[in-house]
Amino acid sequence: MFGYKHYVPVLKGKDGEFRALARLTPNARHNLTPFIDIPRRDLDFKTNQFKDSIDVYLEKKTKKIHKAWGTRRQIFVDVFDLELDLRTPNGSHFVEFLFSRLRNYNVQAIPVIGLDRSVDTDYVDAVRDAVYTDKRGVCIRLLDEDLSMPIDTYRDVDDLVGTLALPKNNVHLLMDFRSVAENDLDDVANMAIDFLANLPTTNDWKTITLSSSGFPENLGGILPNTIASLLRTGWNLRNELISKKRNITRFPAFGDYGICHPDLLDYKPYYTPSAAIRYTIEREWLIIKARSLKKYTFEQFRGLSNTLRKRPEYYGPTYSWGDNYINECADCTKGKGSLTTWRQVGTNHHITLVGNQIANSPLI
Image (cartoon, rainbow, N blue to C red; front, side, top):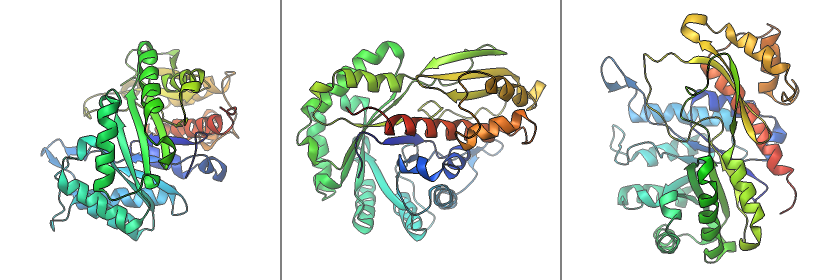
């Protein structure tokens, strides 16, 4: 399906990420296969109840996946943050319901399962039914605890593949290290290399992707009215692997978590964020931060946009939809936006840039 010169952005399935996907150019879409992590449901803090029943919630997410990505290209869809025992009001397993709705929209969805979920037989059965019906294979998501014990994991993956009744050439492997700190890069790189170097029948798998991120949980460590840079540790991890590529039979595709932390953090209804633009450059994220939105309003984004536009790191208004929005916001020809808008802007630019980086990287 794809090789190492391909990008797999792992996105949280929030409105900003969906809208960022929808605004990608055809050329940008060609370079990537999105991986959607459907997030857990929002609580109504007055009643402490979920705002939507699981069937209504998944129906809404299905519509957004269809609108954002369409039906022409495949997309990975996972429910990593949802409880495994969820059922719809009529008793259907939530995974079965989700993929039946995606099927109705003709979305080319590939289901995802992890070794941590393979002990739940109902979950495995629901994934297997989706795989059998759609005939697009499956993605097995391996976490760092799996990758740190390769011998056990090789065996467990083989057992799961057998349970799903699939040949390996219909199985995608995602090596998901999630959050990687700068001082852990060497250890993680060695773990990834060890796993890949000894993976049995390496060339039999449909695809292999390595994903990680160094984006912090929040921007609280950056002072207001400052410009800071954060290291893209996922990109550095890839470069570490390239430097030791002689030990790897099959080099993985690249995945990351866009411009957010891999973990879905609990919503704090009384937390007031600051205005900030998250802007991806070659090896870092540029963070241009102002002050509290509650006190100083979204008008601050005009000044932030103008500051970014004047910097040499800015890629110009024609680079992506997000870059054009920054330019027009600075010119006051676009609105000031919302937090969702600015997540869309930053994510659209990020996906475009990283997709180009991967597609145009030298041969390994």
